[in-house]
Image (cartoon, rainbow, N blue to C red; front, side, top):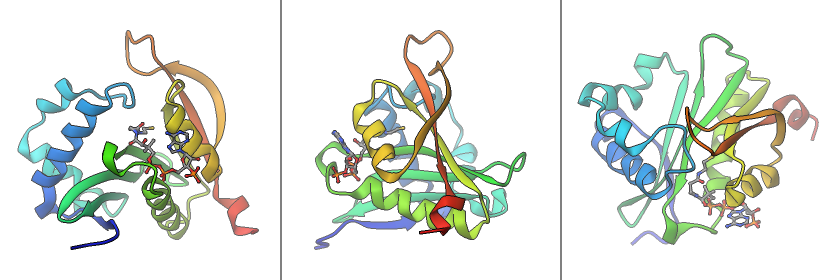
Length: 174
Ligand SMILES: CC(C)(COP(=O)(O)OP(=O)(O)OC[C@H]1O[C@@H](n2cnc3c(N)ncnc32)[C@H](O)[C@@H]1OP(=O)(O)O)[C@@H](O)C(=O)NCCC(=O)NCCS
């Protein structure tokens, strides 16, 4: 029996495990994400497979899963868009309710940060729903700062999303 959660990159053969935890996260935390459970239920097998196939993204994605005692208990994905390879994005951050408060999300951010530094990014950015106090606290405690205006979380939603940025150039100096 594992005593500590294990974080590892997802591989193409994990796509069904990834699909299951991603759908669980959207169902559990509908206000935390721009996408929705209903929308992602319509994805094809090929689309789920592509999300965890770094080869298809030329290494510009780091999809991570957290496992504990054989169960998937957390998820986060680092992504660099080709339009601006100096910026790494964090998407899909979710920890299953029974595993929260143990430092797992912070450990996921640390792995994405190491990857982003190795990819020569100058910053990491993400969007967080303004009333999501746990997530806002997480990102602030890691060193992210709010930047820019708030936007609709998704079209027609009353929820607002705030962009936050973590400057990697600053972290080199410490
Ligand atoms: C937000 C979330 C990812 C945090 O995951 P977690 O593994 O519990 O977070 P950690 O244990 O790594 O916490 C790290 C820091 O975040 C802050 N934090 C986490 N949960 C918090 C809470 N409920 N209240 C206040 N601060 C919190 C704290 O500063 C904490 O540091 P500390 O333990 O030294 O005080 C988790 O609550 C979650 O999955 N929520 C639903 C989905 C979601 O909101 N995703 C974010 C999308 S942007």
